[in-house]
Image 1 (cartoon, protein in one colour):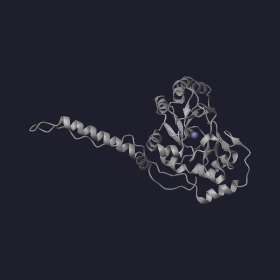
Image 2 (cartoon, helix red, strand yellow):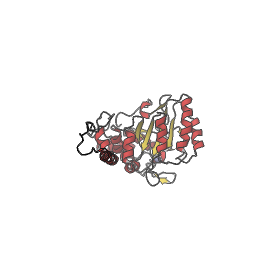
Image 3 (spheres, protein in one colour):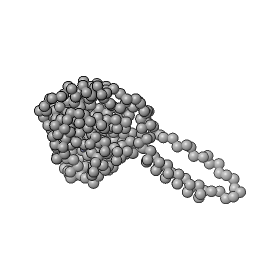
Image 4 (spheres, protein in one colour):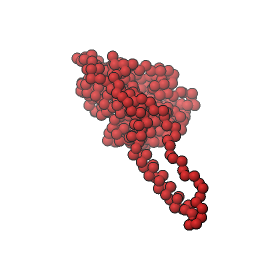
Amino acid sequence: MPSLMPHASRRTLLTTLGSASLGALLTACGATQVAQTTIAQPAIGTPAPSTPPPAPVTPSATPTPTPLRPHVLSAAERLAIEDRFRGQTPRQWGLAVKGVVTQTATTAVALTFDACGGPGGSRYDSTLIQTLRRYKVPATLFLNARWIQANPSLSAELAGDPLFEIGNHGTAHVPLSVSGQSAYGIPGTRSLAAALDEVLGNEDRVSALAGAPVPWFRPGTAYYDDITAAATSAAGLVPVNFSVNADAGATFPAWQVAAQLRTVGPGDIVISHMNQPGSGTAPGYATGLPALLDRGIRFTTLSQSGLAVPGSPA
Ligand SMILES: [Zn+2]
């Protein structure tokens, strides 16, 4: 593993991240209790009711705190990676360059959902997530740093749901290039150092949410060159893409999402988006997912999919 930073508990982090929504919840409960007390107030001279005071509120099903070990490279380890790849010229640019994982290592299917963040990209498709929960289908959620910053409570809630696993979807949501290659008109990083910044700049954040180092990475636009893919692996992460694109950046109508899902077979990694409510993605899954379950398709998170994770920077 890369050198590891100590150490806060998952519970502490979740509490911190969720403090805003928790505060709102407690305020609402308090107002309700005041109203009930007023209505039930006994007349003067009658005995006080024997109803015991309400039990103190304690969190239920609190996960066992696990040591937080943010995935942080030491300066020396990072320099070694930069030295190793310095001067190399990329030979490939795209979605499935050498070293990028596009299939699970079992017959199970891994659904992955990106939350890209930024202007127009920081919303939350609650209907889609409800569908996954309704059918108890696990998924890996690739969160961009900007989406997490815009949705801290939601991020903590999703990270705390054992159905889901958190992945790293980059810091500024840019293609991962050593030479400024563009994808979809978005300029990529211009050096290996900038590419490592894009990968590692979000790693503390997602690892804090997950309560453990997060090894799964997908860049904004999902484009790599073969050097940045190899450097991602050298940094101890797994560069992940997909074998089925179910929503084309949340641009497909529902029927097309469902049609893409019908093509899913054993071992596929499926990409879709969880940040575009109102798109065809949620209704496409609402019809497409039950059909896959009826076919006997098994679903998994990436961590449970048999894929190897680099043990240490190399
Ligand atoms: Zn994205």
